[in-house]
Amino acid sequence: MKIAVLDDYQDAVRGLSCFRLLDGHEVKVFNSSARGLGQLAIRLAPFEAVVLIRERTAFPAALLGRLPNLKLISQTGKLSGHVDVAAASELGIAIAEGIGSPVAPSELTWALIMAASRKILPYANNLKDGLWQTASTNPVLNGLGRSLRGRTLAIWGYGKIGRLMASYGQAFGMRVLVWGSEGSRQAATADGYEAAASRAALFAQADVLSLHLRLAEATRAIVKAEDFARMKPDALFVNTSRAELVEEGALEQALRAGRPAQAALDVFASEPLRPDAPLLRIPTVLATPHLGYVEQDSYEIYFQAAFENVLRFAAGQPDNILNPEALGRR
Image (cartoon, rainbow, N blue to C red; front, side, top):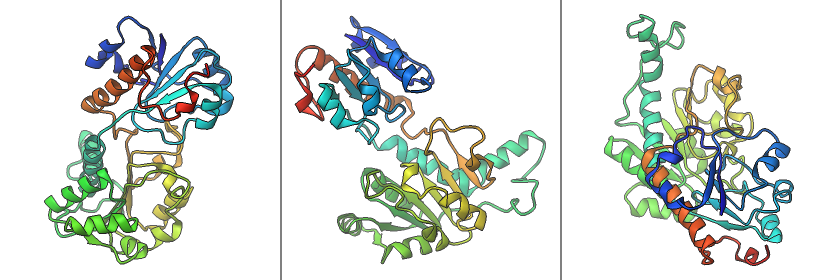
């Protein structure tokens, strides 16, 4: 098959052990994103299969309709609204889903919490400029960092990542407070954690609030300005899940108002994030370029599953197909 691997920004895929699975197929790895639907359609027109790295490229109906040779979209991990499934099914384009692991995003989230809480990045950057024990030359921002023991870690969402985060908080001596669906709250209490009395209580009591929800129509913009307004003036808000979970503009407004004091973010509404993005101009924001799953072991897990789905499809034995009604139409 003619196979395209999209958006491999670091040119890492060809160095993976699992890349050898595609030996014998015609494979092209793209290291940059195409600009505009027309350019993307031209780039992908020859290919029978595309392997997507999470949600880095969207496949709306308008694009799918311009790819007459495309038979398979092999998704690393699970689909998350970036592919028009109905249009793909109508056109006979099968979508294969893969697997993932909660370990890397959980560890990245905890690293952000530690770094933001102790102001590691500004201290380190200022040290290179000859400034000893200086978090900022602005006296207002040159406060001390703080430890986590005895403070409240609030977790919204108690899936695989939320569970790991709770265990990390417990290991660091934090009070762990969980909010989510009724099932999530029951699972958290069964595991020995505390369920928040309400959503308002979760935000009001948090010293660190970490968001771990799936993006769906019911959760889009679920975090509102009024939620941030309830937070402590020294609290930290962390989002490594999806930027669209937060109401547009609400976090920027909240940070400027001083509740919460700071934010640590790995996800953004538009990616790659432009260097002139307003969030990057707020000194109390620690931002990383969507690194949650961008790590050696995770890449091997994600891509091995995605490549195996391609091989099964090429052999006439499609598996893990999200839209089986598409099979045989093209």
